[in-house]
Length: 404
Image 1 (cartoon, rainbow, N blue to C red):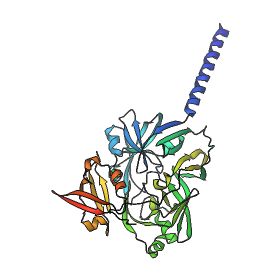
Image 2 (tube, rainbow, N blue to C red):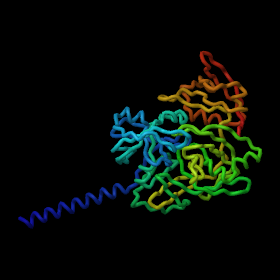
Image 3 (cartoon, helix red, strand yellow):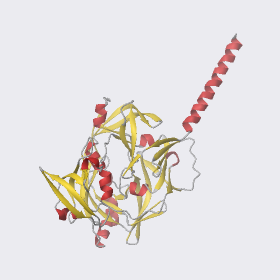
């Protein structure tokens, strides 16, 4: 009887071993997750504790997953208050921070429990993206898997940390992860001089590069651009931490992972707080650079793998001179929040506060912010805008031209 029981236990143990082995092999298979790509920003459908589908961005520069506080309250998640913090993302201000403990996150077929997901107000920046901004997946996702961002196939691929082996021909560069944020080397080229520095890989930033204030000062970069006589645009950076001043111009080139990006549009931050006041970084690299590659973030092996798709073109920017913001929750109301001096919009008489009624005879309710952004990058094209100003409507015909 004892021998029979022992034999049965052995059989059960062997069965459990094989089940565990099979389960382990299954988890080692890559997980593919489709995403929406809007202005080269990755948006994912996420559920928290079996919630309704939520709209999350992939934020490689987020040291933790983050949730819009409004959504946390809607889902009745218990929040542990942390007070206000400075240096949370871009912006010179402070941010109200809390966290929700032990939240299950489901994205595609991937599931994990975040022991403390951050909760902070995000609606103030959702208007700049023109998308509902329910939260962001950052280090907590990126540290659990080796993550490939395939900008051509519009999908994430999650590889097992333990099983991942790369055998492709892409470029591999060293990656340092500091406080959950990936940092790699890039080179700014200006007037024949190279300025190397450490850059945060910031996938949700839609532009090419923003340079940090101390790095600019140490290398006299803004003075060099001004002395070249090229036009500079004064604007603002908006982030979770509020706003800070920013000057936009072009440099000769930016070199990254063996590719040279000619005449990129670069931001010169004038920040007193937040990420762009840091002395340990040169700036950030955004989606205008990253989307030219299939990007693999391999944290266990401290490397970034980049497979280039094509030779990058010289980027274009807005040619009208209006900064638009959309209004939550549906984001189909576009309001002019800034009108650039000496721009076609300023010459036509557009004013801050004007609300878009139609663009080229298409109703504004049918236009997403990203569609308008792309339509305003065509030099020499005449566009028709109908705007609401107070109780009256005003019409404009404007010819687009390069501002920078």
